[in-house]
Image (tube, rainbow, N blue to C red):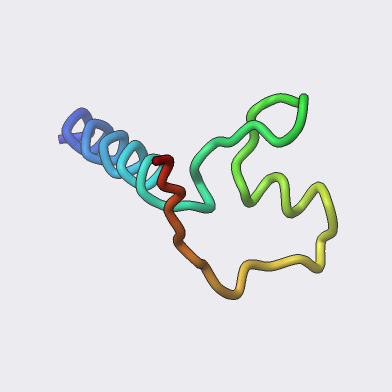
Length: 60
C-alpha cells in the first residue's frame, strides 16, 4: 500500500504545481525560476495575494 500512496501523492503534487498560480514556477527578471510564493517571501514577508485578475493579450 505505501507504493500506491507515494504515487497518488506525487500525482496530486504535480497537479497542484501545474494548476495553482502560487505554486507555478516563473522567471522573475534575470534570476532563477521561483514560485510566486517564494518570490513574494523574498520581497517582503508581509506581502500576500488577495486577488487574481486574468487577462488575455490578442495580437492582430
